[in-house]
Image: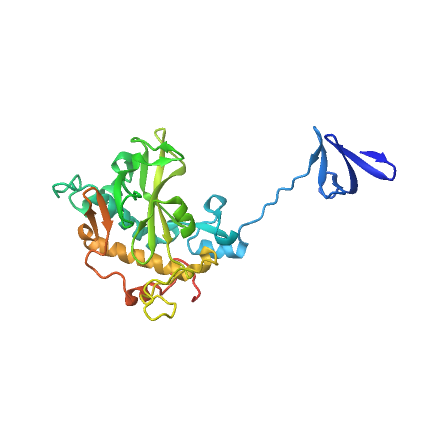
Length: 339
């Protein structure tokens, strides 16, 4: 630091800067120059002063409420993206182990999809596991399965939005790397992620069910779980809702802006936890669909276009106002205030 007339100066690179103040409260001397920049003395001379600010994404009170209701809050559980008009939207990973009813629902849905893959599409004869019960017993007794033996549903862009095709988990890619036949899938660990529809559209690959519900299956590595030198993965269900209150309301027959089938639309201007009641309804409704599939899986999830499957109601009414009103009751997954 040099005195030049009545001013103190620093030389940063080849630039002379006049000092306006010096602050040593942080344990190091931080020099603020007249142009508003902050500098500290380092091994390479004067260096720009950078402050690392650790700010919790939610208050401790909010985190406690979310964790109580099955939401696992950790930095790796949060993803941020820019929504409409620059709004920041948060995505939360739901911990199904904390919500037994949800774990059971997802397990049923996943097991049914996998079991259908064991049937021969061409001649309609049972495959390795002739009944859903035998398939579920196999999973219970031996949850670690080779990736090549675990069927997952993938949605090609070239087919109907409700249709998908089976692909072995071994063919999935993570960060551009194929998982491979010898990878292990722990079928006893399920993941669940609620994703804003704006982000879901950017990802692609979602299968449209009914009522605006969108589902996608992906694989994620289980941190710290290596068996015989092989990384272990789990299947993660990603759920989204393609409609919100800013969308044209589906099924609004009388023009009052409300869905006449009782479907609750999330408000895109709120963050995901603030749409708790609409997500409760969607989760409850997915459970209802899983029950329909369980009662008659061969017709509820049907073979379509030879190699594709299509998610349908299977002849059972799973989508009307009475059912959706019932699905909106209770706080099974989230604490919810009436919306």
